[in-house]
Image 1 (cartoon, rainbow, N blue to C red):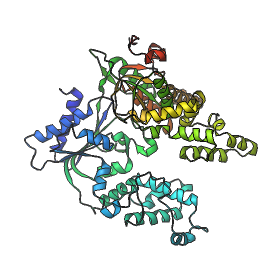
Image 2 (image 1 turned 90 degrees about the vertical axis):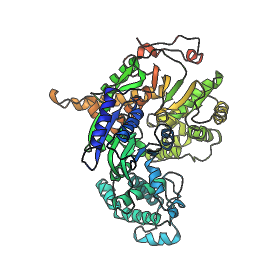
Image 3 (image 1 turned 180 degrees about the vertical axis):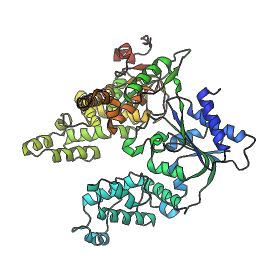
Image 4 (image 1 turned 120 degrees about the vertical axis):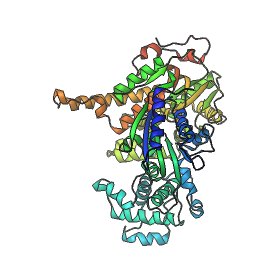
Length: 550
């Protein structure tokens, strides 16, 4: 496969910088969905390695993937003799001493198991709190340790100083230092996030031995967290190449940041703007959407397909619950399907709601506990509070609740009998996660990242969520512009909040999974061409002449 002009420019630039007198050089590559970034990265390594000026006996490169799954897949693409493939997490893990590995808890940072003070510790904390360490105190430590572990800050004191003034707390800092020290000494449970932060600190202080590399490649840098980027900067390499899609930073809830923005002062940014996945017709619509809501200068080119295959069909949703409704439809139509997440993960909230509805048992699902707490905190009037306590469902479906996932679950429960939902759950548990052996795939947008399908159907919960976001944004944009002079008026892109930007990027990821056909994407310019398709027709594959873009 020959290189495009953009790809060749990136390869040539990489070689030039590697052969320069600079001790360290950076290149950032903004690559749209399906732009052949892996092919480009492989060619960078091959070109540098095969250059007669390169000392091949000492040449060493490493490719950092976003996830373990992608790291394993990349082993098949790169020459393993010259390129190592891993996540930054796994590099940190190998540098972690055995005593700390024994203290690892394989769960998230927000588990109360991590902060469970002994009687002696409670006594020690009495100078900080009158009653020792409260539940709220434990939650604060857990929350802020998690934030610190993913941050760029070397010292806990620097992290505390970065907080808003009313959040800064000397007592909190002392407790964070106490628990971090215990974890570092192997005296306390810790998480994977902890040892990555510890690795960052060791690198910063030159305590751990730095491996020397010729080339370091960082894939999906648009979804990196601050500490991963700091580790990448601290590693010793002649050339560092960062690649990702500027508009695919969709894991903000995991403290990810836009690597291109964070690293804007490191090297120049080049582009890969042609997708080898997406048809010209779909690419045009994606570009129009991106320019309208994300980046005015966005370029998204597709390719002219010689044939339009129909071997894969994906339902892409905003929530797991919407997919459960689709599972029921497919089961009723006796159609097989693939899943990208386990049934237990997808049905967690649904089962929690069913358990409450059917048996009135205590709320145990964390997401629902949060909702109940909101009910208790929000309503001061006892009568209203009592009303919603008696019916959690009435609050969830009210205008006060904005949790789309839980609302969607309630909608499915209102439509389908509990026995049908339970039956669907047990059927779904028999599906192997990640196996692509059926025509239909059910996936959320978050899980679809990196995937591609011949046909993509954007589900209504996805469309509805974005509709609400855009309506709110347009309302506040109008309010702002009413107070500004004509020459100072703001474009809607300039007024999006970070949460609204996340929804825009999620939609962009969803619509850019489609190769040949895109259905029900109601926020695109040509929606009227392909949205009015009966669901029964889609499920009767083969009896229907597909709508093509014109």
